[in-house]
View 1: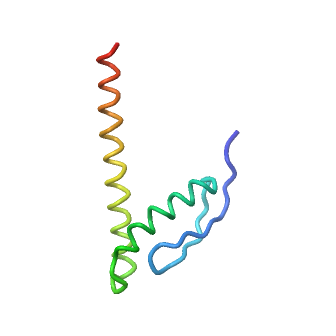
View 2: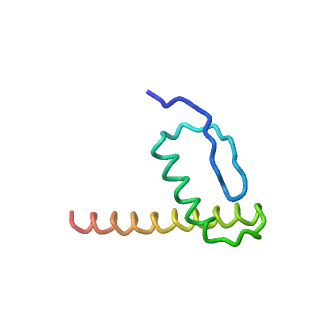
Amino acid sequence: MSAELRKVNLKIGKGTYTLQTVLDDDAVRNLTRIISEVTDKLDEQVPQEDQLAVICMTLGWKLEKISRRLKLLLETMEKIR
């Protein structure tokens, strides 16, 4: 069974965006928390486009870290076999 597409409001920097997503409430809250952690550290004078770029870079970096950890875990699991 696939999740229903729904609209959510996501505050990113100075703007609020209405997005369609299949993410559940917990996932949206977690994403909002991650975004807030980034934008709260930025100076209020940072333009919205720059804030969006920093968020994209941060999320990309987090994905890269997760990818590396998963690769190491998989390699470790293969060695155990």
